[in-house]
Each structure stands twice: as structure tokens, then as C-alpha cells.
Image 1: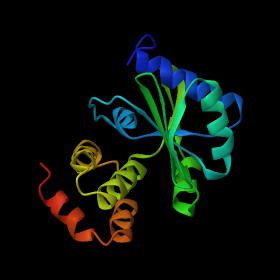
Image 2: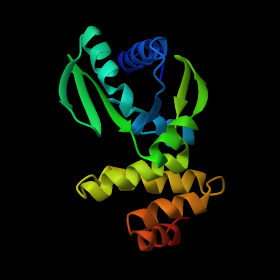
Image 3: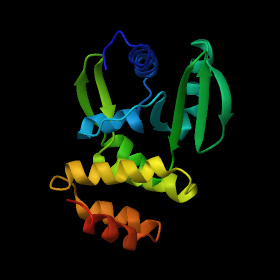
Image 4: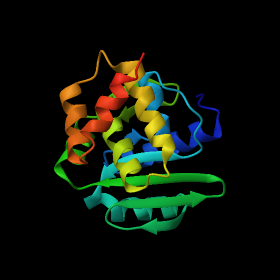
Length: 178
């Protein structure tokens, strides 16, 4: 992704505004996958941010010209023309830990924080468990496992699957990996 792309400019603008306001955030979703050798098309920005900053985030996005589509204690969805940014609000200990431990990467857009591959798997699993029609989440999990299996903390990954009573699914996925 180049800094000149529309999505690139959007990420840079939103993360810079969050950073200037002292709000920690980390990429999750489709864009974060590229940090772990998984590339796929996506048209929105997905960020993890602390729940206790959601009011400030809302006001900041409104100032940037976004319109709130939905906001509750779990998530916020915003749109500006064809640009969309979605927030998952961290309030539970696991999500707060993933946000705190997000690693900073250097990109053409400048430094960006991204959650761990294990955390991405956990979020993707949660998305799929919440709505089994989200088959792309399951495909993303497979791709992350395939590309990163030797570097993953499989105990952490297994814990996410256990949390959703889906350990059998992890075993099945691992069994079918090349």
C-alpha cells in the first residue's frame, strides 16, 4: 500500500489524529494481515482502541468529516464518502493486553501499530463465531496459520479457540495445513 492510495491516506489521517490525541490504537482486520504475510483486498480500516476513549474517538471522527453509522460499548462504525473506519473497543483484559502489546511496524505511511498474529486469529475467530456467514474470517485464520505456523505461540492460539469452545476446529485446520 502506498501513501498516495486513498486507503493509505485515510489510515495515515485517522492514526495521526488518534496519536495526537494520545489514543492508543492498533490495526486489526484485513489490513493487519499484510504484516503477517497474508495479503487480501479490503476497503475499510479496522482499529482496536480502548473503550474508555470511545467518546473522544467519536468526536474526533466527526471533526474529520465522518458520520457515525453505529456505536455501542463494543464497536463504532464510521463512514465518510466511500471511506469507512471501524473500531473494536477494548475493555476486556485479553483485548486490552493485545492493544498494549501491539507491535509498531514501519510502513510507507509511517509507523503503525498492529496486533499480534495470534491476536488477529482470536479476533477473526470471534467474528466468525458471532456470525458464521463471515466465511472470510475463517479463510483469514487459515491463511495466518499457513503463513506463520512456525512463529505462532500455539498455546495462545489454542486458548482463543478454547475460549469459544472451538478447539476441535483448530485441530481440524492444523491437520489440513500443508
